Length: 190
Image 1: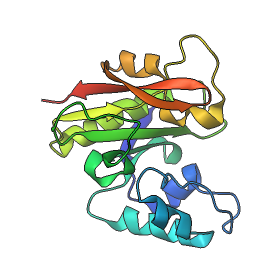
Image 2: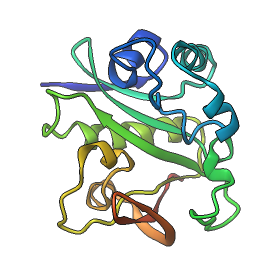
Image 3: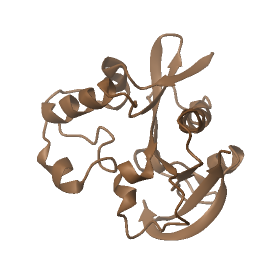
């Protein structure tokens, strides 16, 4: 298996990883932390996919995709923090005034899990942010220790995976997910 990370600019590939099986289903599409909640709550069924298709056509891709050959197998949502709901999130603190980027979602398709793809996605998201002159990148993973995490709620990532990628804990948060505290981790890019 040879994993390649590319900007998420091909909508059909993004849909294959984070889209619903039914086009009328209202699922996250990784919009919950990207857009204001009022807009997020107003988008239903196909409108959510149409919004993501627009994001894929934008100059700055909405994240990165992992490919095994030509098959999209994973997704990471990454963007400037100022362009996400983390810019206004009261539970996730600001460390300083740097215009950091946020990496808030990692998803690996069923059938491809347990193969290290999340590590490739973290590295790819870091490189994507670096290529766009981000001074640092933040993540808000679960600080779960050795406790098992439900895969549905592991989208924020796990502390140990970010530590392996060179991130360090920068702050505690008041956010929890799936019963686990989340921490703010950061990696300087320059």
